[in-house]
Length: 321
Ligand code: SF4
Image (cartoon, rainbow, N blue to C red; front, side, top):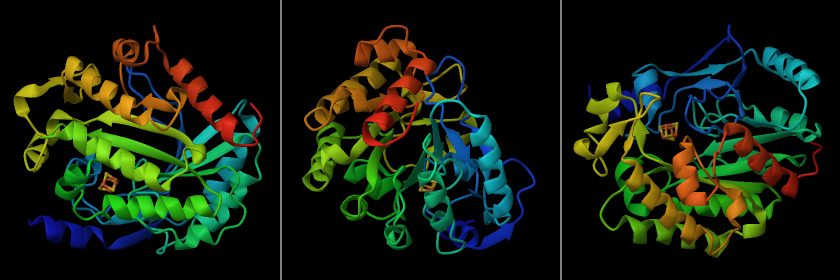
């Protein structure tokens, strides 16, 4: 079946009831340092079809699903927050793109004010889209972070062909910044390709031509990783897949060799530090050795990363630890 046909089928949206939990912890894996956020699982699938996306494997050619029994979502949120101690960072972009489906069944005009009225929760919406019109109309949005997944322009052209271009994503970030939202960026997956250093630097410089560093809560970096069952999908990647250069980690995911990952993170971190403080930068699903080599933090743990990200939120939001 052609890729375009797959995408057309996926763009059929089904609205169903969620019989499972809406709130679930980020499925971190042992031996890798996890950011410890909570997923609000409101939809499954994405029609943007980035070549490397694990959702291509999980949901294959199934249509995109949105869960319509939203009362249960809010009941779970209330119960969760009542029992929870300390700050909770919620995210909606784990099993779909956070903003892709907003026109089909709006969620945020209710969810964003709900979180805004809670003084110990932060909500992050992670997207590659420019679907911000509804978001811009929401007035109560104190504790919400709008975040964009970004890449080198070259990798985005090749592997994220159906998503808005990097310039358009940055323009959208600028617009939400102007209406008072805080921002995050995720360089993930970073793909090694010809001239990658200069290309990633270009994206970083483009971001900070428009975005005020003061508005950034955090920035993550994560290199390309995939489960071995996705090898046949990865071989269709236009750039970046070099079968022989990957190793299997203890979480069963294929990654670049550690020295290569370390080099990539060191370079990108150096470019980011031209604009932001090191404390707001972190790595997604990396091991303690890489943390030591890149950030000079020994014995890094998920607990330490959670504290780092909670502190980043405390610096920007009026929340109580
Ligand atoms: S936009 Fe995100 S969720 Fe959608 S296909 Fe690309 S990586 Fe996957």
